[in-house]
Length: 310
Ligand code: ATP
Image 1 (cartoon, rainbow, N blue to C red):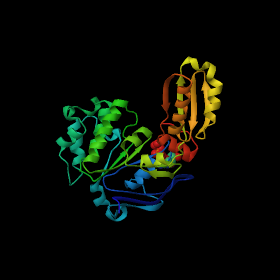
Image 2: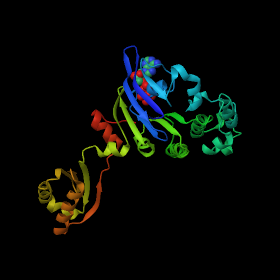
Image 3: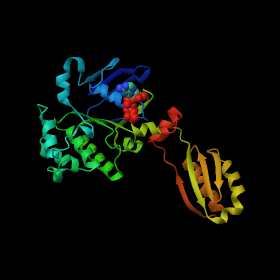
Image 4: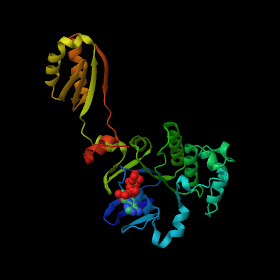
């Protein structure tokens, strides 16, 4: 039994079926990421789990408790990152944490939270004077004031620059180290890959794939592209080389633009061996070689047939 059980959630707004039938289970200590394009239904799903929206159908159980019967108890056990707009601009960082903390019976010491979100030196600063990244870190800290077991972060790095984004990643990973369970939504595939134990890819209100990032990628076809930049002495060898490469069973396509070859292969390691054998036998020099890496973006494209856009 997981810390969170989501069963057959559905939600429509008039004719828009925002969430069509979503079920999953999350184990204690996991970082579980819901990823999908704009309008996929991530926020609606998250808000139904957080008790902020009522599902049309389906159930949510947090540590075996349901919102209908145990609202007060669940609220004490979960931490929700608020929007930056929920911050009190004229209060200091410390005062904001103090106000939010007063809503809960159980509390985590504010000094500890300031340290976790790396805002110790800004405790006396008013929110209106913080940078975007600092505000975002404060909202993440607010999700921690009641020392919850389950933390919800809805797009915690959207709009941040790469450095500020990495700072947020460090905070999320430090929460995991403390044994917390984290449910995250994001637009960023790289973020999902780096942080998540498991990823749930949603599109048009439905789960299209759910697994560890590694398993999702490994399930894809092994066809990969090898790029080979040859020295200019290749000029006289272009046609014979293409013909030779195409003979190998693992090579499905060979394209070239001047000295740059793009070779599509079902078994890149074998193809590479074949390529190197040919270039060495003919005394041809290779200037650069690379094999493209598959990532979660390829998983999305494979399942939906659509390009991924951040
Ligand atoms: P984004 O990444 O853009 O935040 P999302 O994946 O979180 O998107 P949702 O915000 O859950 O998607 O929206 C899913 C669909 O439901 C969208 O078509 C959206 O316009 C619609 N929707 C969401 N909330 C409402 C609402 N309160 N009234 C009407 N339509 C809504």
